[in-house]
Image 1 (cartoon, helix red, strand yellow):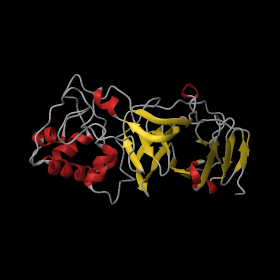
Image 2: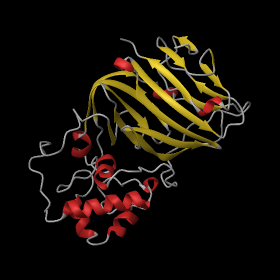
Image 3: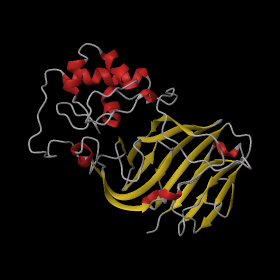
Length: 319
């Protein structure tokens, strides 16, 4: 591949940086969930949506982090609209439980699919009380079928973490709070039991070796006063293409494994730029990095506004 290349640039994230000279650095803020569902999960049924967005905190017939489907159905029996309304603007009924984040970004149509699925799955079932705190009855994600997308609380990430098991043996954590890749690991997926056992106060266990991880204390900064706004994602061959905005920029990001799990590719699309877009490559010391377009100078990849509509950044991991 005749791509612009630089060896020996670090273990951080290839970040999108609009070229706005003279503007002070700005730290990312907390996730804004209540946004239009511009990238809905088209084509997914209620069960598939629930598996991705609900089962990290809810089970059909037992309480883990959140109430069971049976309990939810008891509250909203024959009222799927009530489930949709709660998912968009959730309250806090239990003082000792973590409050559910808004799922408004999924859109009412997809939330209605989930609501109908919950009511159907709960039919004729009663809630099972946990016996001795064992995790045996909780479905495992350790050796989950790949690809797999799981919304769950993860180490070294904000509360809006999304864990993704890619085809092969690589997985990653993407933080929807500041819209950035947190880390990549090799091995099995995750053990969710600490989250469920702690009623949302624990973190999933990574079942593998982390090969790529930025310094959280040196998270990427951007030359902009804008904060990233997460708009959800769509699935492409089972992998999520995240969508978010950064001021006037509309951005999508898809993470895919390289052949033979030798590394990963971040595929960006940036629209709305009227100046060159700068991707920070800081934090990839000792790793080989290639880009499909643009010019690499030190730790910065500069791409024209037109070419920024399709940019691939390949990170080769150490063997």
